[in-house]
Image 1 (cartoon, rainbow, N blue to C red):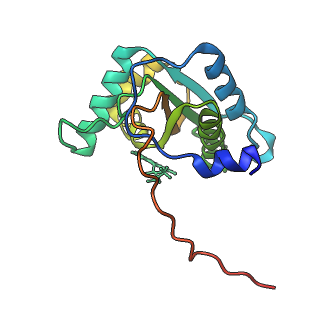
Image 2: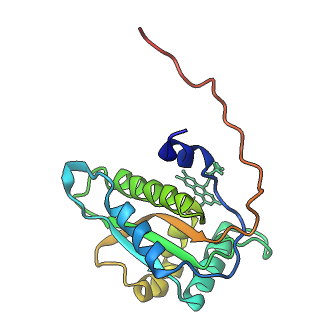
Length: 176
Ligand SMILES: Cc1cc2nc3c(=O)[nH]c(=O)nc-3n(C[C@H](O)[C@H](O)[C@H](O)COP(=O)(O)O)c2cc1C
């Protein structure tokens, strides 16, 4: 099978990670792939924040969990050593959510191709955009007047044999 198609088919959202950090070269490749995605009207104004500082990851994890009302054993960041946050201008950025979503998808596929685990998540944006996440948003250096949209956690999958979720294939109609 073609390598690109193989990567798309084997991607899955990893839910546990080892503590091993993603190396700089792989991280640069992942971010470049995010930037390579198309953007509406070629505005290219989505921003990428790579978070690897343990203290901040912990604050985002715990703040998100509390807002979700989830039990203390649930970790919304699944212990991943890297969190990539995409953000977009609050104003005059029609379709910015789609720009960010495309960037995250490009990055998760690239992580898969590099043998890394990753998962598309939005739950941290709930915390970062909440007043309880104000200090963290500032510490993250999210640009002024930007809002966080979509995230990717990345690392080494601690459970590569995790069963892939099944897909309902009955979602297509052809008009010929
Ligand atoms: C827009 C979007 C938002 C998501 N947000 C979360 C999230 O906040 N937390 C989470 O654990 N997974 C999140 N996911 C991952 C999905 O739950 C996951 O992709 C889905 O269960 C299918 O599994 P797979 O990625 O292994 O194919 C999100 C996925 C998408 C596309």
